[in-house]
Image (cartoon, rainbow, N blue to C red; front, side):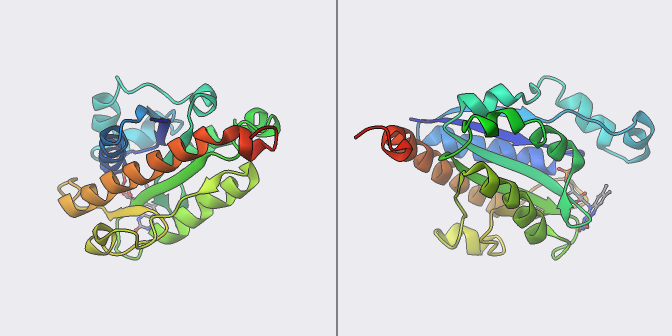
Length: 208
Ligand SMILES: Cc1cc2nc3c(=O)[nH]c(=O)nc-3n(C[C@H](O)[C@H](O)[C@H](O)COP(=O)(O)O)c2cc1C
């Protein structure tokens, strides 16, 4: 099965839980998975000003930081971010802005990509954030794999067809229905990754 890189940013742990559920889904269909966080670039004072931020940073100290080499390695990607005023978090964007070299060499094209994320409010920017993230993947020539309504699990957690998303809860827990949808998304992108990896020569126009 294909190789999947799951790259996320999470300040208080919701997006991290989604990343792990996606990883379990991808692994369940045989994919080799790397879960990678993006580097924290917020000032220390800001991190300490919000309950749970420092705690999550410490709790995930052992999660490796994403490197662009992870994207070169992967046959498919999933990117996750909390909403920041309806847009992706700068910490994820900072990482993605380092992909110019791979983009220039065509190393990101023809690979499937899915997006996931969330916000505090039910309509607080989940969809605009995921759509904004996708703008970049058109430039890469990646293959955007939306969740659509391809499984009843998507409707069961609010019906976001752009990618899986959550509404953050005060207890910090993601409801099982959302984790199930994330698991499905991991399977879906991993299946496309394998399919497209098998036909990379054909897609490049150099063979078959
Ligand atoms: C600077 C900032 C901007 C935010 N903007 C929004 C927003 O536009 N809409 C919303 O519902 N939540 C907003 N939030 C809340 C976060 O999206 C929410 O806490 C996050 O999804 C939790 O994910 P995490 O636990 O993975 O960090 C914002 C939070 C911060 C710190």
